[in-house]
Image (tube, rainbow, N blue to C red; front, top):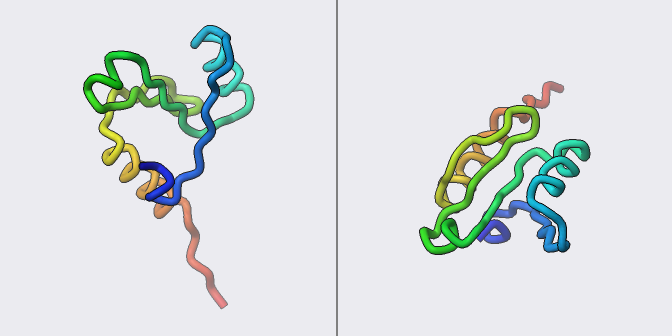
Length: 81
């Protein structure tokens, strides 16, 4: 789903606690973290955390893709010649 929207992602499937993975991602300044547990998998959603802000809440994959697209659109600066 993310690849279809041209969003790069990495999966951290190490045998570490979720808390440790979140701390390491925060220290590495990863912009967004998606936490997918059993409940999210069952509901077809993702729990989203944002660097520096923390937990955003639970979103559908489509809503998360739109959030990222909007973020990119707002961060682009016009090119003036």
